[in-house]
Length: 305
Image (cartoon, rainbow, N blue to C red; front, side):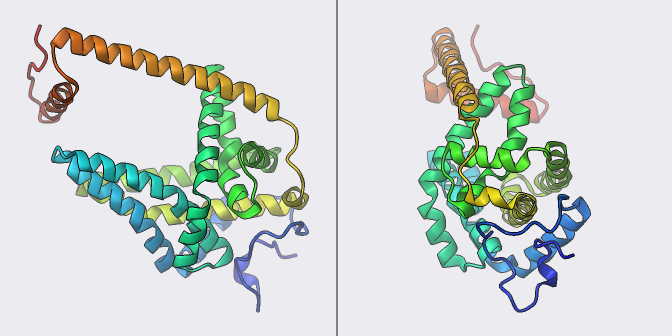
């Protein structure tokens, strides 16, 4: 019997339609890594031009920002921030393109419409995971895998905030180790490729190369989400399960931890400025000079005794 995620074998239908409210499960097993790679490659090739066009904008801004910052320009920081902000609607738009076949303009239009929901979910997930890390690290790692398909749940099922995180956890439930293995099977090769490109061509070229690799990761994640949704079809139309209290407590712990860390960093910065007699700009330049000297194998004294 055909799995509904095997898009290559569908005939006379839109191959990447949105996940229906209650699809019928045709397989109780998560898509294998090999099949996931084959289907991702086919999907990536079929949407290549549009996906790369979407990704070039944020990663191009980040690359320009990296160049400008290396020249000491503050504008580089602003470009990098702009690229990071555009990255969220670009990711949403890429998911829409692979899932529903939307074109470049419509993908970005809907993606920007999801900017604030994605920003809020990102803040929540970061706080919750940080809280889990405070609890001896392992709970935070568990949550990272739980939340691996939360963006797809937000974009395609219109789940918001904690509901998107809980929905993702419910999809991953009973398949945690399988999902972890599929994440590792993607992350390691992409990290190796990105590292090689960055070492050969520099960090700026590495950022531009992400415009090619990121869409592949989006297609891979979408197909994994689609497979999980096929195993548990009733979830798409259901209200999120319980578990909100756990995430709220963990999120509060995360906010407290980040506040304490920020306070420590500010105190350390003020102390260093007081000790060296340098202002923020001078201190930044001194640290940068020390980093450059270290990369060149030279030892220099940038801070007075």
